[in-house]
Length: 107
Image 1 (cartoon, rainbow, N blue to C red):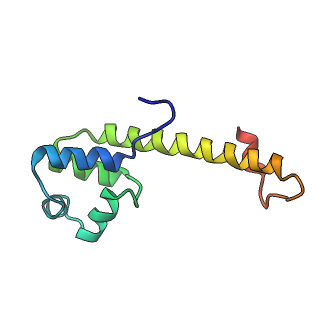
Image 2: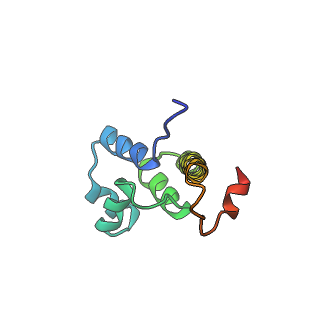
């Protein structure tokens, strides 16, 4: 995997659907979820939860654990890079105070 990029698990889910020749409508029926919710999931607007991953595994056979690991990897990578950019921005603009800079201590 490229060190500068992480794939959102929704991209994995879309690839699986495509390879199975299935639609969002089919997935919403198989997962017993509203079509709008499925659309938001597949467009990366919702985090993949245990419930979503388990329902996706039941519908497609793709391991829930793999989706959850992808979500954790994605979240971890982007939360770290977001904090670093905030920290760099803070150093450059030292005259401005961050409202809550305590989260930067984790870096």
